Image (cartoon, rainbow, N blue to C red; front, side, top):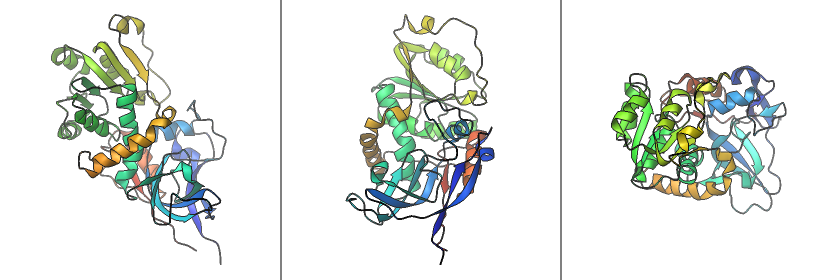
Length: 341
C-alpha cells in the first residue's frame, strides 16, 4: 500500500506571475517529530501582491532559494502531535501565518509556528492573519486614539474592511476610500461616516472641502494619487501609515517631480510610517486574542469575497481575483482534504 500524500504549491522559477512560476506537487505525509504537530489544512488566505512579488523575487526582506513552498495563512485541525508537545491534541484548531505554511493541504512543523484557534473556520483564519495586521497597524504604527479622524484606502478589501470596523470601535471618525457604488455601500455599512468613491470623486478635493481640520491618521495600501491626498491633508502631528503600494505592482512606480516630502510634514510635525507586520511579531499573540474576543462578542464581523475558490488548484484563481480589484472582503480558498491512497 502506498503511503498517504498531500499536495502543495511550490515556486520553481522566477516568473512575472505566481501562476507562471509555480506548480502543484505531491508530497508524502510524514509523522510529526519531537516538538512538532501535523495539521490538515481546511482553508488558506490569499496575499496576492506578496505572492506575485515572491514569484518575481522582489520581496527584499524574504530571501528565497528555489524551489520554495508558498503561501502564508492557513487554518486546519491537528491530526497528530510529536513527543514533548503538550499544548495541542488531535482535533484542535491550529492556524499559521508563517511563509511556506499556507498553500498546502497539510503542514508538519514546530508547534511554535502555529497558534490555537477556537475553531478551524475561515473567520478565525482571517482574524489571526489580516485582523492582526489591521489591529497592529492601527495601534502600534498609527497610534489611533478615540475621537481622531482616520482615512483608509482600499476600505472594502480584506484588510480595509477590518481596519474600518476596528477604527469605529476605537471611537474614531472614519473616512473610507473605495471604488464603485457597491464597495462604497459596503464600507458605509461598516460604520464609516464618509466613503469617497475614487472612481467618481477626487479624494483630494473631498478631503479639502469636508475635512478642513485634516487627518490624524491615514492608512494607505494603494500609493499614487491617494497617498498624495492623504499626505497633503495630514493634521498637525498626523500619521500616514504605509501598508503597501498596490498601484506600483507592475514594477514601474510613478516618478513624481515635486517638493520633497519634508516640506509637507515638517511644519505640521507629521510623519509617514511604514507598516511591515512581519517586523512586529511580539504583538501578534495579544492582538489575536483580543480579535477573537471581539468576534465572539459580535462586535467584529469578517466578510468574504463572494467568488468561491476551492481546492489547492483554486489558489491561482484566487490570487488573480484579488489582483483584479474586483474582490470585496477577504479572499479565502477552501481546501478539500486529499484522501489516503
